[in-house]
Amino acid sequence: MKSKLISLSVFFVFSILLSACSANTIGGQDEFGSTYPSQILSGDVYVLRTFEKIDGNIVGFNTTLVIEEGASVLGDINLFASDLEIAGRVSGDINLFGGESTIRRSGIVTGSINKIANAQTIEPGAMINGEINTFSFHENDHTNNIQIPEGTENLLRPRTLIIFQIIRNVFLLFSNILIIFLFKDQTIRGAKRVQKEPLVSWLVGLLTLFAVPFVSIILIITICLSPIGLILLILLAIINIWGWTVISFFIGSQLASWFKLEPGHIGIVAMGSIFFGIIFTIMAFIPIISIIFSWVISSAGIGSIILSLISSKKRS
Image (cartoon, rainbow, N blue to C red; front, side, top):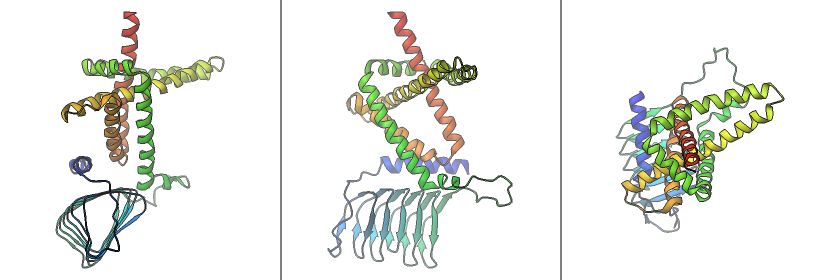
């Protein structure tokens, strides 16, 4: 199950990177038998009507896609936190991340269906030629004595988790762009530090992540020194965000080098932020791995900032 989940997660990442789609909405509903190129959908309800065709792939975020009987999609469908209804034909694979899906009795899917945390209904008579690969959470055991606070289950729903991740990713993107704009030289030095001394940076950051909160709590308990404890926690939060900018810049630099791009410093950090956004959105449904991965990245980023600041002070 673990290997299948990892493969499926990687598949989702590459489905986004390799779906060379043009950002057009499905339109022309009054035309008969129209053919449209690849689509990127966001929000709203999109209907592919009878005899209409998508000659390419579909990528959707927080949207509803309806493929009527007689309509067809020649490529893959990749939906995130979205609803899908198929009564027509899909020639490629269907990759579903959250949301709900329904395959009507007239629906025909030539490829496979890969889904994570997706509630799916397949009506009798529907034809699916490929495999159905599923990862889902176990149902709540009503015999369990542990009581979940009222309203908490809403926070654990796939769509809620993905929306939360989207908000987090947008915050990460804009904060990284702001920091690289204000502290470009320091951030670049931190990225070079990660590249030269990754293990040392990670160890220093990990020690900081554990030591600072511990010391801060002790200071806060003493009451008279509580302002110092709060200041330490605020500084840790700032350095943590700055550390994410360093790591995003480092990853963005690698991506720019691989794809032979020259997007500039802001473009590089944006590429790294988007990459992490995709990874964390996928990992939102694997909490333990997500937390461990976040700690590792935070530790490396924090350590690189601390070592860079120490190094710059020594030089001065």
